Length: 407
Figure 1 (cartoon, rainbow, N blue to C red):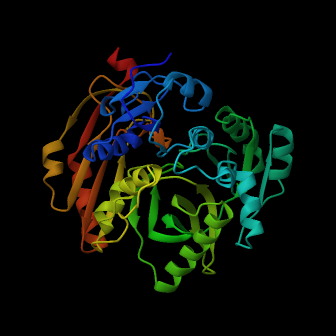
Figure 2 (figure 1 turned 90 degrees about the vertical axis):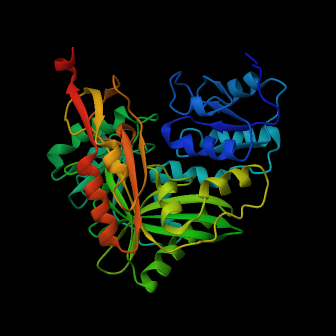
């Protein structure tokens, strides 16, 4: 179904709220965009010049829809599903940037464990299988607690922390429901400081590194607050070196990647997951607030074959992002947002984005895709940034009625 597409567009595979900055940056630079997403109500569609409602996994259908239109570049934001298509279409159209084949190992948590082992990076016990009985039997021999999740999942979907082998069957069933391959991995829970590290590489070395602490929603495996981490130079260099080594093993010499990791009491950084792409959860906004860098602009330039000179820090501030979710444990309908103006006026707040609007169905905040907004803050100290976020989140309140009450 070829459409009337703009000339020489940037093809963006994905139109979730996480992709909105990509479209905004392209528009700021006068670059026309064609958005691809299977959701007809994808949040980023209004920011694109044209849109096709197709799965980002279906490279052939996308190419057929483009017809004679040849994109000037292809780009993916914070989504794993579109990464194989990014590579296939990049090769098909001879794009200036082609997503590396080796990086696709980062989408399979079991395969990535092997990459980590081959690099000699500190690891931990794990077991994976598409057979529920087999993975349960292997997981029962691990050191508890363990974390059970889909081997090919992302966005904190289908994750359960299990304290005793008796809890494995239910956790495995839940994880399989979120796995395209119906494969589950169980991993020993690693004690230590929960961190995430983002890099943007140029010629195999990190041109931008930002390491952040993560705080989870109480009782859940989904991130609530992300803030720039205070580390010694030795800790920073160690973690950056590990991440650069893994990027090399994944074939990422140019472009973004991020890793979830734990810094143990022994000083070793143990990698929990790889995300061989741009970060989600509004982390690019955090990078801009903390360092003055534009990783979104750099990614677009890379996709177009242009110099990506957006990564030199222009400031050294502390920054954090608060991810807003429903306070309810049941589905509800958003009635309104209270306190938006007051929250925006809190000193130190650099941005507020609201993804849900009145009348929208809101899910419990048990996975990344269920967040309904975000607040970014920056300042000269972690204490000031934390205080600004605490104040803003106390003022900005989503008023949500349970669906049974709303009906």
